[in-house]
Image (cartoon, rainbow, N blue to C red; front, side):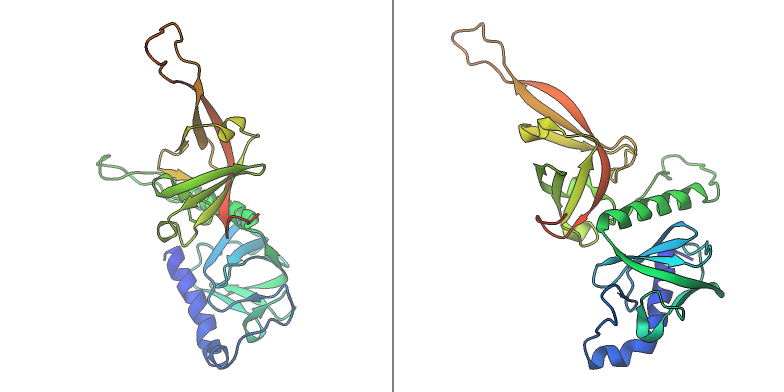
Length: 259
């Protein structure tokens, strides 16, 4: 069963029970840190002791368990049982994974950067444990790391970029990147050439056109230098010096003012 189908089961199991009250009035959380479990969009797991979820509002959360609860990403059925559909870390809350009950110990809102880190590690672990595939026609099957819009953007969809002290903010086509228009790109060190580079390009370390903060992901820049000044009649042609900036992390930013 696919990850998307597991999400559908989780969403349906909560939505059916809460459809009437949700439509009757606006839902108000019992505490500011509580997560509305109706319409969960994404579930990731990089550690057996916790999972990360993105709610329908777009806010990300971490759910910690009282004991190890592995296998959430590979589950056939997944349910979050919480009073009135609000997960707050109360003793009555639990996640049921293929009939196995895992008690919830805490629910914490997290930033997009933290969710992106969990999602990236979750996908890497899942890719590493997939069964081996025999490739007969190499031209027909392309093996590689896919990635999620929660921590990746496609280079072909980049519309604009700007540099700042935090690194870079990239504008993409939201219809092609999971609804996300802006992405924060953190660099390995301050990339001074970004401030004056007339040209740049993104290079994927996985060679799949996705920038995710994977090893080898980088920005290639080109800067002007003095041309050949020996000719008096012809203007010098511009020459370029090239550099590279290492990309460490990628995650959605809600707007140009986001963190």
